[in-house]
Structure formats: C-alpha cells, structure tokens
Image (cartoon, rainbow, N blue to C red):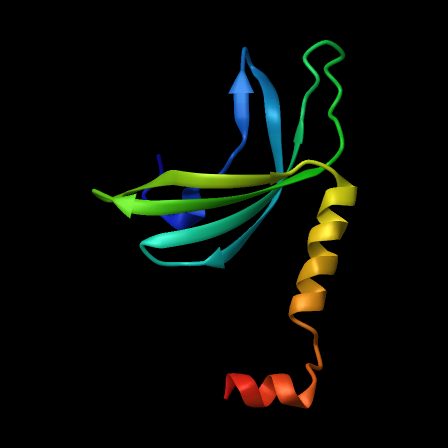
Length: 105
C-alpha cells in the first residue's frame, strides 16, 4: 500500500524474479480517488521470457492515509488496445461536428 500516488506501482517480484515488469505509468486523475494506467509485461514462468506488452487501468481510493486498489481493467493484447482507442476516437473526435458542440454547451 502506498501513501502517495507517485509511490503506486504494479511491479511484482516472486523468488527474486520480476514476474510483472512495469514499463511505464500514466496518472489519469489525482485526488482521493485516482486512476492510473500502467504499461507492463508478464514473465512466462516456464521460459522466463517476458510476453507482449499489456495495459492495466486501475482505480485507487485513499483511506486512512493509504491508497488501496478498488478496481482494474486489463487490456491484454495490442489488438484489444487498438479497438479501445478506435472506440474512444469515435466517441471523442478531435473536431466534433457543430451540432455536438451546441448540444454540450
């Protein structure tokens, strides 16, 4: 458990081997509820090679001075990640049509 957002990470070590290797971290929201997106790789315990990059989006709540994980969503493949990006770009285009702008004003 971590006391600050900057201390939160997902790297996991078992028997002196890094099983989950954190490659990057992007804080999406800060506060008593925080959302963090991690880029990581998992080690195959049989071959001890790291698999493809994956993404985990996690929500943490600060209670009694420490952040505790409340939920997570893992993007398990590049294909799935690209599908998520595609959907988000459709829902939130860079240049939305004029009627969409007026509806949200």
